[in-house]
Amino acid sequence: MTAPPAAARRPPAFAVLPFALVALLAGLWGGLARLGYQLPADSTSSADHGVLMSLGFLGTLIATERATALRRAWSWSVPAASVIGSVWVVVGQAPRVGQALLVVAGAGLVIVYVALDRIQRSAHNTLMGVGAAGWVVAAALWFGGRDVSTIVPWLAVF
Image (cartoon, rainbow, N blue to C red; front, side, top):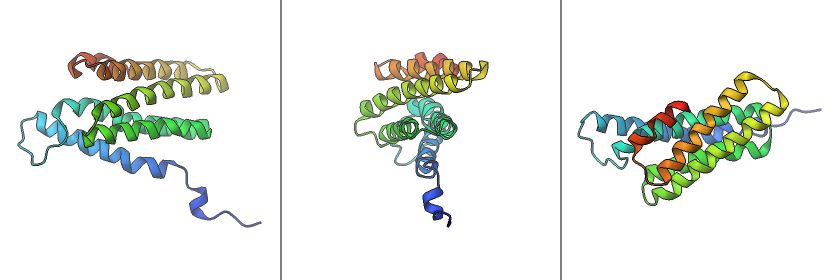
């Protein structure tokens, strides 16, 4: 019996993580703008910095790790929605679409944690699920037009 080619064994994370780096770099770019640096071609507003760092980068990494742990094909839709939403916000053409995708990704992560809790009931899965609910609230408030400064506590919950 021969082993499948390396590309067939590669987890979907290899497709998601490069785009998570885009969110990281855009968040860092926005952070430099918040510090007062004059940056050329600043497509990312400094207000998006916190959301891109917490939901776009960190959220995508966490969702990727949880999808890997759950081993269900559907769970990969969560980091995909997160990274697509983040890139959409970075591009800036229709940021509301990106914001909506981040709400969907947060809700998907809550569902992933419910599925993981059914497999292995534990305090840490429950606590991380509550943190994922913080993602949903933060993203929903941002989508609803709230200023980023008002959603910071929910980003901290996440």
